[in-house]
Image 1 (cartoon, rainbow, N blue to C red):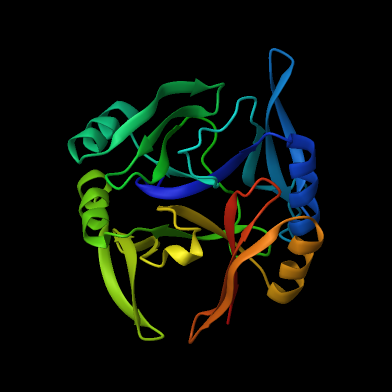
Image 2 (image 1 turned 30 degrees about the vertical axis):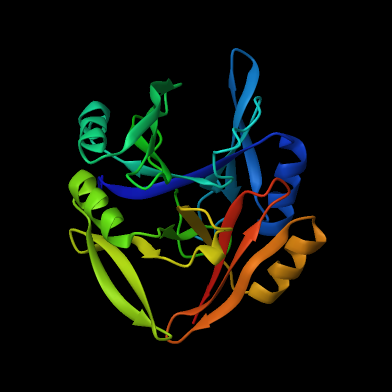
Length: 258
């Protein structure tokens, strides 16, 4: 397993059924429900595959939110960074100026997790896998394809993620603007920029899903009750992307690569 990489994303919805229907139609997702003591606690989003497998591939998660979301908690999808040992990673988070806002917990037999804030206040999750290792397919429409951190102080964020996870940040120029890519062991983890207009003035992680029909899915999002928050934007040699929100203002992105 490749540790210190982002391998999963999920969101929790107060109107669970309507939210599932939104994503099912937008991405052609099917769902496998997970129960604890006969209570529905989570749904795994699946995509049918063309690789000859008889079972769909797991791509993301949606859960019911049974409590009011705090006013100061960004509305967004959550990203999960796979770590080898949860408590040791928590120690690094605290030493680097981050916080733990939900202590380690068991997630049935899937793994162990903690919810943290980085030194800028962006939410992320630590995940120590047991039977669940993250998304099972990449590079196809409806699957996770990218993770982008929005930070007003990229140098503080660089230091935090380097100290905790060993990530290096490489600066690039795109359309005349600076953009950074996080890398570890020559693997690209995701990106970072300062443009908070893409995130409703919030500092947070935004997961992106692959698409080959960006314009159509932007129209579908609006038709289904969501909205286009930013874009679409074209970037030379990369493609086009946009940031959207679902029925409860949770932010996510769509990326159409060249």
